[in-house]
Length: 208
Image (cartoon, rainbow, N blue to C red; front, side, top):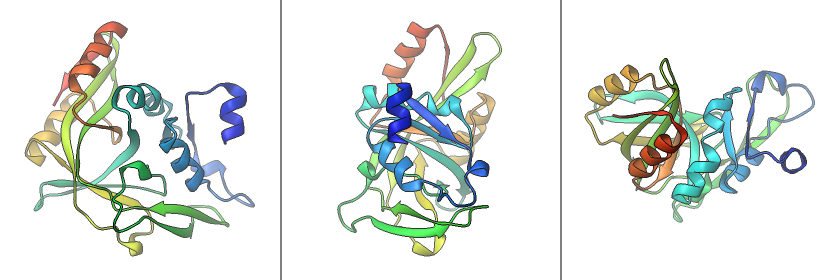
């Protein structure tokens, strides 16, 4: 992957898991490591979300791809998970991240992937959605990574995210603005910077 990125001078890329099958492990560790190096990434062929990686790393210093998996209504949080890609720059020092292995969906080889427990910190949720008038729209929101110890039995990278709004209000507002389940999380409050970037690019901007 590193050689492909260098050869084609890419700032980001995506991967379709359906085409990584027999004889080649799904490269979760490589995807995670490249995210930590600041390259844009998104799973399942989502090049639109992968586009966010490089500019958000430049703005925030640290940013990574994630997926909204399911709501925790009682805790007011979102359970975030993906097959094996995560940015260990956001990990706690204690407990240290561990390496796990599994056979990915439709794959016959064992893949290695990192399982960190993420540290509590302020983050900005960023999604790039379609916009009827201006082509694309940044959908952003303030949120926090909250304490949630990694569970090996889940067999996928995971953590919990708490929006600043009540969860039901956040999800309603996010959906109204066309936000998708794939997102980028940028360290700190990057809403003013992203608003300015949208203005310079001529794109729409929506804050939840």
